[in-house]
Image 1: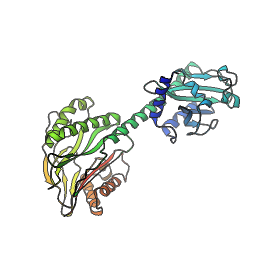
Image 2: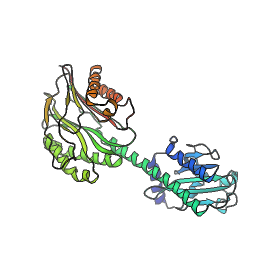
Image 3: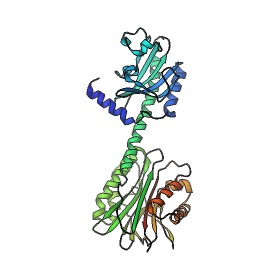
Length: 393
């Protein structure tokens, strides 16, 4: 394998982020099944790094427990990744390819077979291997095909894991990295991913020409990298158009520019966006099918919603802004629909928001408490929160 190909292979291995991680049932079940089918003392999923072999899953104790590592120079799977073909060694002790190899000298292994595990780009990541203490006859054509099927199963799991990791990183990059310094105002946001990558994001943006601040919480229907990419598109368009357009026009621009992408995958976006003046608290807001934005304070509690549809639900739809204000001592809290999984309905969520406002003194503490309240039962959705809090007079 030339240096360039090896560099690409190592990059693909690193992208998995699986070295030195704990066992996972999705891999364990495959090696258990292989051991049962082939009646082998030892079956393992081994990943080959630059200098070491990491065992992600294993049955039997012939070469160590799962999540253990050995030097690459001592690995038979390192030989298996030199070709796309399954490597089968029927007698480890006498095979000329293993002359001087530590595994042959130790005498623990009599038979080895390893099916290379490939990334979607074709890089060989490691091998699904089986080892017996005694020599064996060659596997039949049907057995080779079955081993390859099991290896393909693992390849799909590896690809799915890498896809979700990339999506999770993209989702994290959609979130703002700094908080505006606004005298008399306090902003905070949280997004806690619930396993599968989703399309939730929040954002804020200072509009220096008008002296306003825009906040948004959006959720693209779906999971995985596709949802995260759509969310990235929504965020980029909204950020670009916001300084030059009214709130309603900005939302319509997002809908127009994202229409083809959303239609292609039959997706839509729920969103709450608001602009408020930092001098007087006057606020315009658009609720595009979201329905979970609340104003809470010492004198009132209010749910901000409208009959507007999500972005992408109907062509050429329009979103007419509503108007209100964030009064001194009040907080605007917007939460994701994962809260409905936990609390059942918007009225119950409003009670949670009101309580969080009453027992906290700043936006960060309120947002953190809401996240806890949004995850206190089993939920499969991300929990996302934005809080804008105005100081009391």
